[in-house]
Image (cartoon, rainbow, N blue to C red; front, side):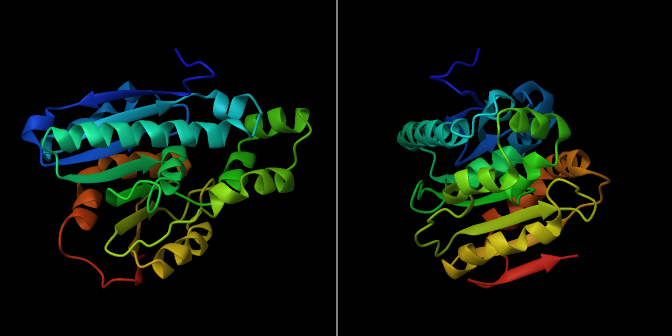
Amino acid sequence: MFTQDRLFQAEEIGNSGQAAAAIIFICPYGTPIQKVSFAIRRLLRAGYHVVAYETTAAVFTAADPLILPELISQVREDIRSRIAKLAAEGVTEFGFFGSSLGSFILYNCVGRNIPKLRWGVFNTGGNIAQGMWKMLDLRQLHVAQGWSLPRLEEAWAELQWPDFGRLDGCRFVFVSSRRDDIAPPGDIVQYLGPMVEAGAEVSVRRVPAISHRTTVIAGLWNAPRFVRMVSSSQGPPPGRLTQSL
């Protein structure tokens, strides 16, 4: 059960003693770990140890913008603790796979916040306030509490534009589709600039889909393939943004 003091649940899956690399896996908004177990199983078969997180729906349904930064802070602290434990058990490499809201949380974990996260997949991404505002039921809840889109963007500005520090040697891929109505590909590119300027290797990969939900599902199904793009030694030169149309 989620409480105000614990806005997420986490589960370690796999045998850390038999895996050289671990993936921090954060589910999409409103999605329990069990519903995306198909993607986790594919990552396990690829040889990774997985630390999976699901988050409280209250992050948006409570219409309280203070919950999002607190959620991110709690998840960050837990990731740091689990990385330290896994490193002591012999895991030497740490990456991530985040979907939708999970992607945004991890966007606020890389770089100076959790330097051990050297590579990962952002399975959709963009402006968190605009994306949430496009969901009619959530927008109505926030309007009822006196919130507007400009006020939400202001409240979450520091999260939308985090201070990464240096990202030299980091490798990231963003997943998107032309028909994603919540996080369209045109909204992604502007948020990649700071990562590239900080020294990261960043690419954008598009998947066939008809909505935000199916984009996320397609990204989850292809999780091992996208992870290989960033965890292997092959890829774009440092500091360069590439796109696959």
